[in-house]
Image (cartoon, rainbow, N blue to C red; front, side, top):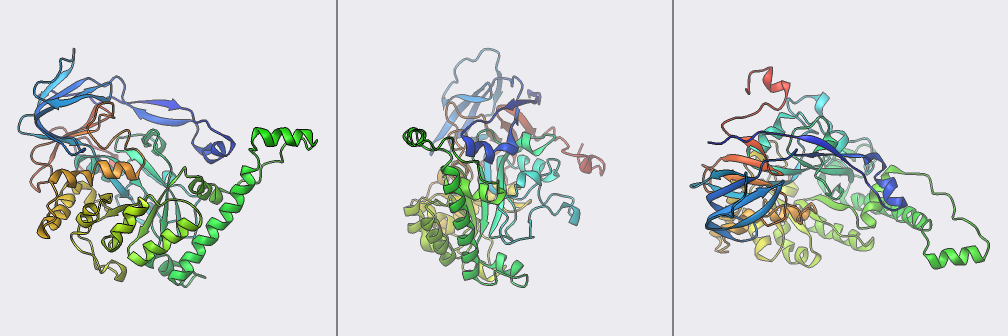
Length: 463
């Protein structure tokens, strides 16, 4: 067996944009982007390649060059000078798995009140907080996620608040700080919540105490942001308006309004730059939130948990909204009661973007098995979906939900070399990830597990 060295370095990328964009991203520039330092070229050959785009190549090959996928096909791979050739006959090759809903790093292990950093439960709406600023990169759960084949995940604030703050899309690679783990070029995401959680948390703290109170609070937050955005937009008049102002002798534009961190996040949604991710179980709550989105002219990217998404799957398709779901979690509270095991399969059958997420430090370790359960439930009601469709629920579809589908989620030429080699069929409960590549770098080898933090080394849990 050939061993591939694990090599990482940090590079700096600068952000640029118009005046408002600079203010929204001021806290991020410069951004550290964790990148491989001259990763070796790798040829994976002889295995069954699941592209995530609907194809299964048997036998197939995948060629990784400079951290990108340079070739995918069947038969003999093209010659690549100096490449490490791995014969993966008897193995299966897939894109890296993607989890759209994780709290790793913000609710890390070992558990304790000192590590409870996911809910800023001091006000019903806290759009100005960022999960990035709570994420602890040494969380041992992140190492276990990559051992399950996960190469990218969205870390979100909790669901106590109507607007919980910004999420962050990260690579499952070690870094000294959370910013260095950010997925390069991933859009900002924003966590919001419907239903039971906000009214349970704030019902005896001045509200909201009801579902209608929830919607009032969210409408009020967006109405305020809408007014603020109108003021900011007056600072960037068109050339014609600028000429007219000069001719009228009005001089330079007014000074910018005072910054409001909460409004900046919501303005990002209103401008279409940030992707809303909404915790919502019941069909009626999802419909109410879609009405809110229509009122303020923004698009929901994905409902999360969405146990009743199957009831409104046609409407989700019409609005282009993804549904990030569990395979079979249900019944732990009333709004989670009316779930069906085939929920994801039914959404996919209607043409929707079904996603299997974890919301769990344990579930993220077996996303492939969760997708298999949801696919099997669809089989039992005779939907007849191919297994390749189930793989898309944990690869291509979540990549779209996070706005990174042009970079990852499928094994296609030019995309990032996020690849998992499994020791059996990827949807089998008996299968484990054998090798995991992130940007072409071997980040996990089942024969050479790497300790993630001193919490594991000190306890003798990992070598």
